Length: 464
Ligand code: FAD
Ligand code: NAI
Image (tube, rainbow, N blue to C red; front, side, top):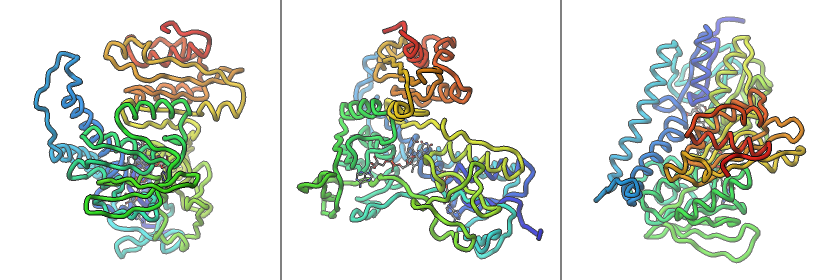
């Protein structure tokens, strides 16, 4: 039975959904995208990647100017002061520019934006703002939201989530971050740089779960040196609001005596969970797994014919670039092409200073799978890093002991996020550490440290 309003209707205009919609339209499919926010771009552009990076950049500039760090370069700054309103204005400008850019791309590619909350009314129909639309293919790209912590209710004033942490009207005296993951460390860094005392309370025995063990240790050492207090193996069991802020009750993760921490502001950043509630998934016949995610096959098809899912709402790392690549792949699959995402090679980056980046297996994961060789190179041996007094961190390359094929790489240095792309590309091409070691790298660049780490896999690097 034909008579569809659209070939493709995407629910959610985050990096997964808006990219899927644009790609589908580029491939000649009649496409619409439903989005309930006032602006397009999802979590990433509105309250995630973009505003957080804007504040990370601005707070870094402030710290450099304010702390006197520039004096060693012969740059004397006197009387540097913080204009938080102007900083927020520049953050908003970045967001508005990019979300407006997506609206422009929708118009250019003839993607209809259906404004409002979409709910399934059947396997091939959804209702948005009181109107029902039928589509041959429906892509669920509804993303994720903050995981709440029972007993620590978010009020967006003294107990906040990542969205309110981007908008604090004044620098708190003491910010306590619950969760030593990516959000806690990025946003904790922002407010520390702007003058807050920051304490991170982490349930596990180390911060940054999922990353390489050595990197996690090094990162904790560096953040502590920067002044962030990190309390591990500790769980928060409750919060009481006081005149001054919040009293948190904490106890050892393994159980034991409770104690309290006084905070002006508490940031809850213990992870995110998929947005599947209120979507009417039962009407479409879609079931969720134990983690409330929608399962798909490699083509991003769900078990229900014509319904697809991508991004944070399906299993895998909750990252914008993963969602985007899945968006392109799903549109290509719907159009009858072959869209593939290699989930083994998805880089992840923490945008603190130094940045922390990784791709592929951690050393621990690789050792479990078989025999490996590991090459490490300290940034202290890299000429560019030395020239700009930026010698913190190292590069680690992990390769298969027999085939020399690169299995993973981990980098901690100021520009790690940019550097990791070359290893991801090398891994996509099935490169060996020898391939990287014998590739000519421009001098003087931080990237030479990757070449030297690959040389260390083979035997010896030159500059240590
Ligand atoms: P989302 O971006 O969450 O978009 C889903 C959209 O669907 C939302 O706009 C929502 O309003 C809409 N929606 C939901 N339900 C409905 C419905 N029923 N009808 C209509 N619309 C609906 N990732 C990175 O890779 N790099 C980073 O630097 C980074 N920084 C981050 C910083 C923060 C503070 C946060 C919170 C996240 C960050 N992330 C980062 C993660 C990244 O934002 C997500 O992985 C990414 O946005 C997921 O994309 P998505 O398209 O799956 O979903
Ligand atoms: P996360 O999963 O990165 O970290 C959550 C941390 O909280 C973990 O270390 C976990 O052990 C800890 N935790 C869980 N329950 C706890 C409890 N009760 N008490 C104390 N600690 C507890 O989640 P986060 O930081 O909230 O970020 C959510 C997602 O957003 C991430 O998965 C990430 O993919 C994405 N993101 C990505 C960014 C990037 O790519 N640069 C930046 C920010 C977010």
